[in-house]
Image: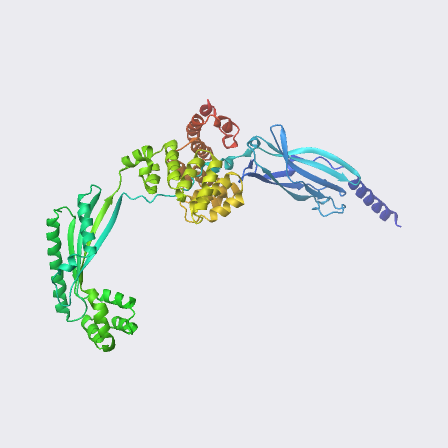
Length: 562
């Protein structure tokens, strides 16, 4: 062999052996970048992606490195899934890093968030295997701290669904009676004034006039002629029937000493073709489809009558069964029944709930802002009306709001068993599952509660917990809540978040804390300070939370916390 060639080959072999035989050097923090840095809570986890850029001539060919990302905090540490990469001469399936050229590795990490992680370090631990040798390299810190704003999402603060009352203070009732006329006549026969329907109508009018909680809003007369004969004759006939009926009713009101009855209105219809069509369509008359087709073909009333008379085979049935029913005047009384006042309902709900209907009780509960008083009313409603799902649901709503989640779940389950189709109990049971972190079950229940008014707040919070902030914003819509504002902050819609927080009816410590976060993110120190001070005043524990919160790392909090 040529000596020159032999020398070059020997040198190459020596270099190859040296790259395989030497130990791997220490990793430098400069080799790694972390996204995000600092880390951030997403849903209920802390995810991160560490990218390593390994320089040339560093990663020996026979080395296999297992990297374990550790989140180190408060004297403890939590490991993520280990990640392995290898040199060119290692037989394995892990990603390869070239000795000559270096390479890029991607190391995913994820942790279930706990509040202690706010002050933490993300460290990479390295275990190296080279043939039969194993050793550990020093750890490298690649990120510090966790921004935990997303962890402020709170299922307990979501408004449970109220099963609403159907209370109406004023209920309009209508009573009617007909006076029938003979063909071509307008005089009122005595027997038509003595029918059961007329007696009932008169009784209701008299009673309404006497009752303190009833008011006659209107009396109306509608008079008709049947569509046989000439139109001019029928028009005069219907008008005369109206006049005679009005005369009778006016005299009867005077006789009964009724002077307050809103207004007395009256109309007449010369030929009741609409009534004729309805009666024919409901009848068993032979060739009724032919009669109905004539009505649709001809709009002129006199031509209609001629064409129908030409149907000689059926006109006799019409004259006997249908036309007599269209010769009448109808008297209708519109009477308002006026319910109990708010003061009466509140007094009875507290002292004698047995006198109230279920809707009155449920409505009375909305008249107080005292949680204990509300709960007492709903408890009374459950005892009196246990077969109405709304009583159980609304009692559970108060139990949930008061933090008694076990009792709330039992009440919601009872409501769902009473009415399996009701959406409110299903949404509320979904809230309980959301609170217990049973997210798949919560989502199933929310899917069964379509149309419930409060569902947007529940679904939005579900998406926050799952880390889908954009979906949370869509679900919340125009909901005015801390959770809705949080979703807007996390998607960087700071203007909308500020508007949402300002619109919350009953702001709490979290409302002001979120406003302070907005101040920090928009570099508005006065906004941060004033709102953080209010948050700490309402909840002193938030002072320690703010002191370790990376949202405020660039600000001096002494004015707000002292």
